[in-house]
Length: 117
View 1 (cartoon, rainbow, N blue to C red):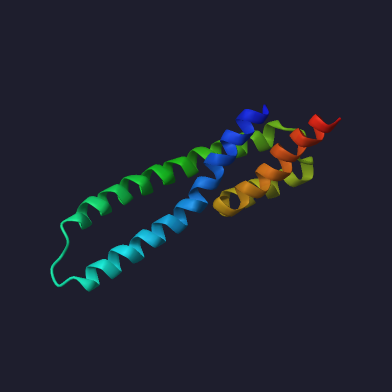
View 2: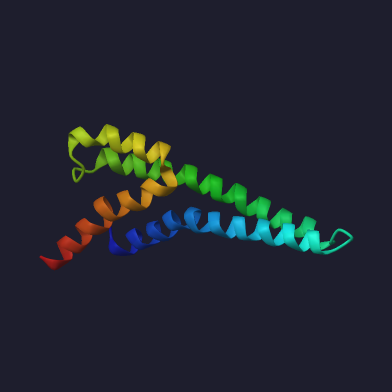
């Protein structure tokens, strides 16, 4: 994988983790602003609709990333054969947390080592 593709993959890999914080912050803002006003805001359905679309898009992205990482896992020779099944389970169950670790260990680190030699 080229360095450019690896960086693009890193951006897509980090988005779900960053989105989680953005989602929680938005929900807290919506709740606190709704509690502060005696009448419901007209902006709330618009904001909720935007969050809903981003939420669906992020879930679809996570499913796509699962496919990309599982395919990469079984096609690469960088991951030891006896660890491939373990990594598949870890990526599937701990996807948002495990994918950045896998990306660094088996995609980015080998590119850096190859560039140095």
